Image (cartoon, rainbow, N blue to C red; front, side, top):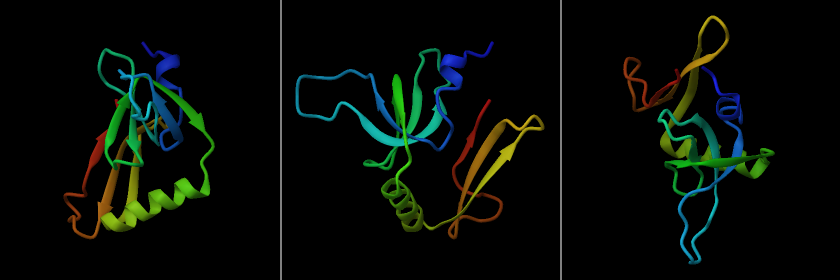
Length: 120
């Protein structure tokens, strides 16, 4: 069964702020800014986010979708350039649903085209 409140919160690739994790009474940031990668696959509801500061995947319980700014686009393009990314391939099912995304770079061969994320 599809839970629209979890599955359709944001489009993949949207600019989001993630929050709702364990916090402590210190000066550490309570939100992360990043690019939405989709819902988590586990039983706990959450969201996968590409953190623009750490350049790693993070998981947060809640997100807020924000407008994509030119500054965010420049950060993402610069990260891709530094990693040697040459293209981003997406594959869809017949119904138009995104099934997988493959990131390709100069260093990866045609057969092994980098990090593959599969959506179910």
